Image (tube, rainbow, N blue to C red; front, side):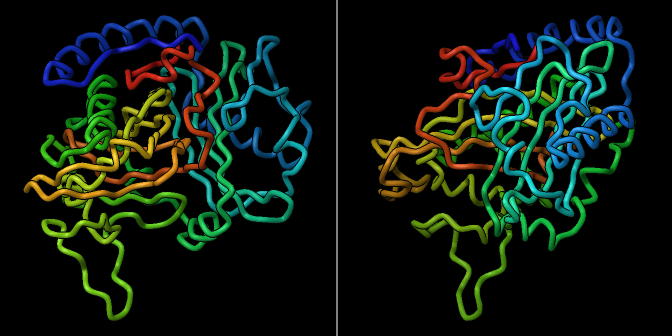
Length: 345
């Protein structure tokens, strides 16, 4: 993957990104027309074939290019290694996000590893002969998370619902809005512009991390006065509280799948907690707060956004704790440590 990069996220970010991203993405149809069309059903079929081959522990069931690159949790491996050895079955939750323009698909799915429930996010990229050229896997070893997703049963309807044609945004605008989420969370001060719809809701490893009901007998904390971040708050309340400041950096932001028809964007990224100065900050009303992890560590994340009319609605993330400062294995070290927007070429 040779990433395109867009720097910065100041007030000039919106215009600059729209212009530059529009230029970047104008190259993509040329690439795809040379490849030949693989529509949504085609991409979903390839993704299902991949999961079947994984469970069968048989990479020979796949059509792969000679230059195939495979990573698992940021580590480059040979196809057939690691998860291919320990996988024992399929789960019951599956969500495909297809990008017919870029010839890529990401699948969120529950699986079984050594008999235990896990969650995976798999990105597949194909060439013109529909052979796999890139496979990127994030494995979240969250048994409770997998059970939560399987209890929900089906992906939320918004992820499968087409956006009305009159309301469909360009690829550049979809990415721009999604990136405002990351930029708004990084060293969050509660004073930014946060593009959340009233119905915004977020799941992380199958658990509700917004609008969560209070425990019996517990009161819902006031986001304007509390010093403790709460999963009971709305998306907007969480950001406007300013209590996410301890997310020091969101980097290696790679926007790899964009589904214009459904208004979906999938990004792979890393959330850093440096356990340093970022733990000490002031809320929007001036209260001094100390919060966040006390030792440095990183989340490796695949995050899905539903965007309509310039606002974020449903959000779903799969995440696994990673060594602090780890990169994806798909970017240069410099890009992997930056908070710039990147696109696969």
